[in-house]
Length: 114
Length: 116
Image (tube, rainbow over the protein chains, first blue to last red):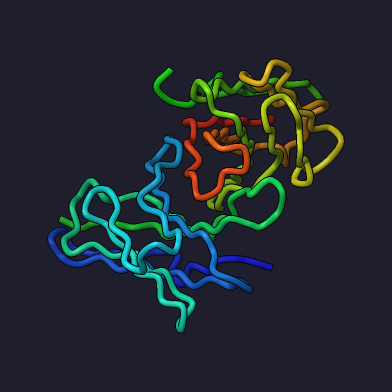
């Protein structure tokens, strides 16, 4: 079975400092992986996706993620946090079933301190 | 429309009442998904449509949950005889490939359902 594990339920950083949100996946083959962000009372917005074309994936708003097969990781990073980055972040994998539905991690709440 | 639209945004119902939640996907998107997001948790898959066909309903928690997409565009999620554990945010997503291969799902803002 495929799944994702987000290692931190809460991360707090100061504005202007780097962000690291950790995600590990389990899959019997090369998965399709995504990071989504959810602001309060809003739907989910796609940040970036990995589809095996390149291991370093650049997304919107300065975020990027690196797929490391040897570590089964897909950590999300940003060099400098902005106050508007405060939100819930979900690491997501696509299941291989007919629906190809998304399987979400438990989420990481990012707090950005002034 | 420009994005996935869901209505109502908020719904309060008494236990035992029936509710209907609507989703307008992005025009032309073949695939439509419903997810349930309990408080403090990630969304969980409920059901999937390819055009008007409901190809997967394995995530529906009980036979009180019913979804339809009769013309392959707008979808309705219906919950009969609501229970308190049905309280959650219900998210709709659409994508523009029938199998969604690497195609991202675009989400609506959700309907927050509260059962009293």
